[in-house]
Image (cartoon, rainbow, N blue to C red):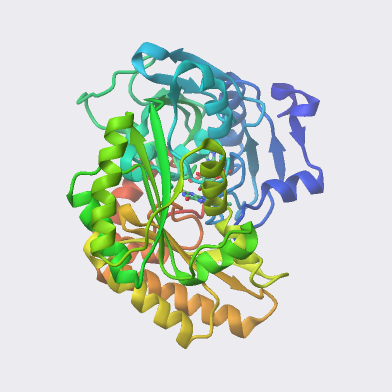
Length: 450
Ligand SMILES: Cc1cc2nc3c(=O)[nH]c(=O)nc-3n(C[C@H](O)[C@H](O)[C@H](O)COP(=O)(O)OP(=O)(O)OC[C@H]3O[C@@H](n4cnc5c(N)ncnc54)[C@H](O)[C@@H]3O)c2cc1C
């Protein structure tokens, strides 16, 4: 390995291995045996060939912000930390796309794009690497308008387990649409490092909107907040963000971020467009929320107030943790058809109360996707067991409502059994055939997804 990426490109130090063997989840992860830091795709390919020859597991590492234990080295092996590959390449302003290497994060890309009038909207809150986001099919607050990573990736460069370099949509190609053959790009989006190492991602960009306005609205119940969301979407309002926070979560955010919103179910909204179109969107939305008993909007028009508002939303994880200092947080991530959202949230809140769990809820409600951020004491086995049973019940509730056990965090270590229930044996079998075809020695991130 040293002969490929140099002495400082290989580490067996305990601290480095520990750091690369865990993410932000509570899954107990094992560190890899060694961490390598390749500088280019040729080095990634050469390192993979060595691993292939010696039957060593390969675990790709982005920024370690994953929430499903995806980077844990369950069978030991070699962690490929891609942090030395951090170039933004091939910006095509007139084509609205850009190519990035694996360690470019979404914030770094948007800083790079600042003067171009373009931006990349997929925003999981954490400043994750864009290739890691492709690997987990991430989404977040802007997905209701701009789509998830699935809609945003135009092409990928991937190194397979045997070192082969593949371009999923053909080398150098970046058309905005294609119907050319199997969609290999979207096979790798969401593959969580189990099919190959993503070494370049071609991303679709968007124009920065002329006007942006954010607002906060409080509701008498979960049902009225979600009804408003559905009606806003039905009215064709191209809402950019519509985030739900339950009473427990808004209370936590108030305390953590020094805010003073009403402690009831709340929507954080954002509108993008021209001045006139934003004005019209706001008018329609206000009519809808008021007809559902919503409060007057509290506005965030200037960039500073807007940033403060969305920082508070993105800090929801830390606000939840602050509810029980010294505890850990466990994020659930189910997604259901919109019509089932009020029912599942109400049932979940009842379940939390019945089982004496602290679990503020925040959701990308426009997509039917929500998270329960359960704050628990990891040294209390009885509480851990209650959380475990709760999360299983929640996922099964989502499946029973024709939803999914993961809207955006992925399967990782924790949801393999649920994935089988969700997809059924035939679909799992076809996935296994694909995995076997691309990685017959099962070296790529073994123990995840399947
Ligand atoms: C506070 C907080 C809030 C979050 N909110 C959201 C949210 O709203 N929406 C959302 O979608 N996610 C959210 N996440 C989860 C996380 O940010 C995403 O899963 C992110 O996409 C992970 O990217 P990463 O670079 O950190 O990947 P890592 O954690 O490093 O890796 C995740 C998985 O991808 C694989 N992987 C990483 N890089 C590559 C690569 N180059 N090639 C192949 N496989 C690779 C790894 O092997 C692993 O299986 C949140 C996380 C935190 C901590």
